[in-house]
Each structure stands twice: as C-alpha cells, then as structure tokens.
Image (cartoon, rainbow, N blue to C red; front, side, top):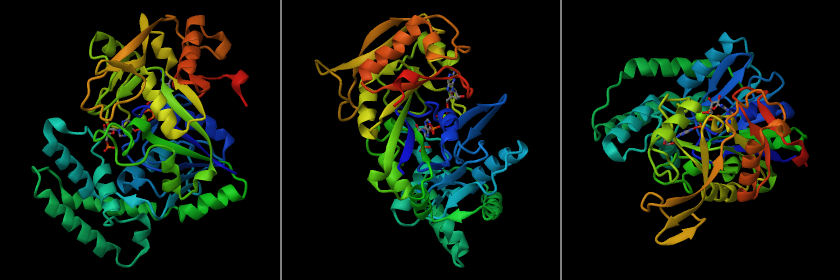
Length: 427
Ligand code: GDP
Ligand code: IMO
Ligand code: MG
C-alpha cells in the first residue's frame, strides 16, 4: 500500500482538520508527520467544536489508530490538555493514540526562548505562535534535543538539566521574559507521567509494517506549503517541512511510498503572523472577509490577515507538493461578499509573470486580478455540487482550470456533512 497525504497549500488554516476527519473514515491509521502545538485543527462534530494541536484528526472515529510521528515536536503539557478534552467528551483514545519515540520534546525553556527571540526581533518578528517550535527544531538539528523515547532512559533527568541550563544561559542574552520555572517544570514532568501511559512506538517500523500488511494510512499535514522552512516565504516560515517530502522524513518512509496527495486550499487566502502576502486586502473588504469567514486563529485567537485567492502561489505549492487533487474550503464565505477576485498573475519589475520571485519579502509584487460576480446565496444547506448556484460552480470550475488540477471536493461549512464530492471526477 501507499500512504495518502493531506496538506495545506497556502499559509495554514485551510481546513485540513475537517477534511482529515471526513476522509479518515476510509483509513486505518492517521499520522501527523511534522509541526507541533503551533497547529490548530478545528472539527465540528455533533454540535461540539474541538481544536486539536498535536493529536491527529482521526481520533474521533473509533476504528482509527492515530500516530504522532517522529517529525512532530511535542509539548507534553499541551498534549495532556488535549487528552483531557477527549476525556471530558468520552472519547476513548487509550489504545488508539501512539507516540513516536523519536518525536522531539518541547521543554518549557524552548517556549521562553521563542518568546525572547521574538521580543528581540521587535518589528521584524516572525509572529510565531510562541509554542517553542523554532527553538525545539533548532536543538534537533543542532543535535542537542531530547526525544520522547529518552524518558525511558536512566540519564533522562541529567540530560534535561544540562539542556535547561544551556537554555537559561542563552536566555540571559535576550531581553528578559517573565517565567516561573518551578511551576512550569512541575507541570511538564507531571504531564510526561501521563504520556508514559500511552503506547510508544518506533514509528518508522510501525508505518512501514502497517503499509506492508495492507493497512490504509493517511498523513495529516500541519501549517501550509507557504510556511515550509525551505520553500516558504523565508524567514517568515515555520521550522519544519510542510510539503510532501516532509512525510518521508517525518515518518521514515521512502518516496515511492507516497500515493494520493490531496492539497487543501481556501477559496480565498489568509495568513496569521508576519511576512509577505501579495493579495492581502488591508481595507474594509479584508475586514468583511475576516468577519464572514470568522478568520481568527485556532491556536492563538489572533485575527488572520485576509486576501484574494492567489493562483501563482497555488501553482508554486502544487508543484512543491505534487498534489494530485485539490479540495477547496470555505466557498460559502465568498457568497457573503458583493464581488470576488482572483490573482491570475503578478506584475513586478515591469513584467507580468506567474512565478514567485526569489524573495517575496524584498519585492513588491502587484497582483493582476480577475473579477467574478458573487452568488450572494447561503450555501450551507447545499448537499450536492450540482445544486450550487451557477456562479459558485463557475468559480470552482474557473479556479480548477487556472490551477490545472482537479478539485474533487468543495467544503461549504465547518461540519462534516458540509462537504461536496464531485462524483463525476472520482477515479
Ligand atoms: P486547519 O488548521 O487547516 O485544520 O484549519 P483551522 O481549523 O485552523 O481553520 C479552519 C476554520 O474554518 C475552522 O474554524 C473550521 O471549523 C472552519 N471551516 C472549515 N471548513 C469550512 C468551510 O467550508 N466553511 C466555513 N465557513 N468554515 C469552515
Ligand atoms: P495549522 O496546522 C497558520 C505561522 C505562525 C507564524 C509562523 C511561524 O493550524 O494550519 P511557529 O510558531 O511555527 O514558529 O510560527 O507560522 N503558523 C501557522 N499559521 N496555521 C498554522 O498551523 C500555523 N502554525 C504556524 O503564525 O507566522
Ligand atoms: Mg489551524
């Protein structure tokens, strides 16, 4: 068997969680392969709203094994809170949530380093989620990190103390950040004890064995391809590989194991945090889009920046991820506006192009916009693609033609049933 992949094609928050939950019915295993508690994946089920940060979005389907893979960075305190959310709602995860021993641990000091680094950058800050993601991946690549499997080793406490001391020394070089080390540390170690009760696995063996024995595995991406460490809008990116290649390094799979790659994108664009955003609307229309789409961060609550769909950007991330099919989310939101636009090209340095420049941070690109009339209808009750208003269908078909990849699913609301599959396009 091959592993199928779901990932975001924009700057995150495309609605990946909802789509993973929906599609996971057809799978045996759902695995996160990168990122950590910077992610916020929202699911609306039976009138409840759940936000998952570290736990894969297959957890609400009782038959599914959920794996937190080795490429993930894990904060025991955040994961413990997520488990408590599941406990409160009667979701039994105990034998269905597996943790990779090779996943790196986010220490309390990593979070403070993240805060200090951002404070030090001032105006130039990344706008990170302050969850300690950057410093943890830095320790991983610097070969200083602690992994979940290390808690089973006798020298764990000693190694923790060494790393903590090192962090405290670095923190002295930064503007001061307020923290209470004793209580944070106590909570962190208590949370580790809770995690110890869950099954730990060598995830590279687990996933390869699962595929070899005919199990269907779905990889769940976090963030989006424009936040990829190498190919995103560097330095305004996250510290992991959010593209399909990240599945291989984050789960220990060879490239030929990759099957379908389902790219998720919103019918418009959003971004939270700093960095370039060519189609951003900084005017009243942007605010209207933010209110209509309820664009506020699932992890930090920050208002998301909003703008039009960006076709050159989508071309770029379709290429990087090898997306074989697309899912457009939040189409319903555009029905609340009077007019809609899509950037088909960019204009910069006197030329028109459909390629991204070397450094979007340094070049002002002007989007070339194509306008569409809005359907001005509420789509929330529509249950088949063919029953969408003509203008809404035309929008999807136009975007599909511009991007050149089939849009197999269209989401028209936050809940599971508000998803239209284009049956005519099914292989
Ligand atoms: P993720 O990080 O990619 O999983 O996305 P988030 O959960 O951070 O943000 C997506 C938001 O849009 C969540 O609040 C979802 O409940 C909501 N959502 C998902 N799909 C749709 C849709 O088709 N229409 C509307 N109106 N909301 C949606
Ligand atoms: P999901 O999985 C949207 C953004 C942050 C910041 C940059 C770096 O829910 O789509 P980090 O904390 O990773 O060092 O922040 O990346 N960011 C996200 N934006 N959705 C996310 O995840 C994000 N995770 C990180 O806002 O700009
Ligand atoms: Mg999110």
